[in-house]
Image (cartoon, rainbow, N blue to C red; front, side, top):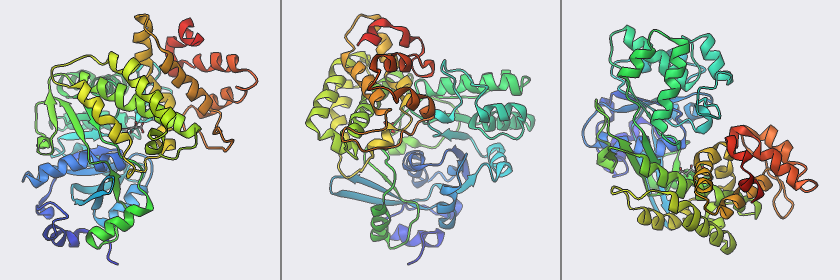
Length: 466
Ligand code: CS2
């Protein structure tokens, strides 16, 4: 069987599996940091539509900041891969051509800098997950984080996303080139503004002369990103082959739904509207709806799903007890904190969520969504808890989720079987959780005192009592 790669492109176009553009003419206009499955199902898919609409400037060089896996799979395929949209029995397969290269930063740091400083690169997009940024608990630069500490010692040989962005901006300024815009595509509150603050704090330490210029010249638009993208499964390779006849070592599975809402930014960019991206003056209402409804409920389905032995989110959503609880959590405690906004129909957004959770074709692992929950809570639930407590509103269902999470940290399902807690704070949290049956109150008190997760909320007596 032939491996998917550039020579197949014209035939894929003729077969209607790839968009009808001349792939050899595509230039690189975007560097994407963190080229995992989400980036390939999201940024690349929207960009594919702009390329298909005839603007050849926007190929994407994907960069892995740590692992070589994406490169190993995609380089032999010249960046091509199959996107498999799954919903129930429906399957839509398309080959994406937007990736013009894949780099591994630890192995090719100079090549990464060369792409970032190329004047044709106009945008840097990122999907590096909550833990990739280097935020401390208060949302500032964590100068003690190993990557950040390393980069502050050697700012011209960066290893972190923030370090690469700052060093490249400084080099562009020195060369008289315009800066690129920086567009975070992670599930963080105020993702653009937060990243901007981080880069400025970093630049003040690493490149004090350039910090002011970065502050004035560089755009960091806020954006809300939404598409459920589970890990690929063996079935995906077979389905890709059935769709086009080639072997694909890097297929991506996702739901058909996608929504990208971006705060308006000036300067060159692909026509992402071609795939339905929305440009708005204020992205926050969208971001709140997404984090507080989809993501906050997702975490609840994942935690209780793991505990009750459900392998996937769809199975958890089909469990009558979990479903009743999560629906009540959404309706009574989460949705009321999402402000009404003329540009967003919250009720409609909410109505569309359950079928997405219940999509049995996704195979979205509860353990995958439960990963890094300590960081996700700070984005998804802690702000809601704060608001509701400040207004004297009930928090019973949110408190149950936190209790469920503490129970989850014990690493054991209700049936006694074990799983691994995958979280950057696991060593600390798992040891706190170990004695929870002997000393439940002490375990709760000590877990709520972990400031990296709860900040000052842990000291709230009403919260702790619930
Ligand atoms: C999920 C998200 O894994 C998780 O934490 O809640 O990745 C979710 O699938 C996406 O944000 C959907 O847009």
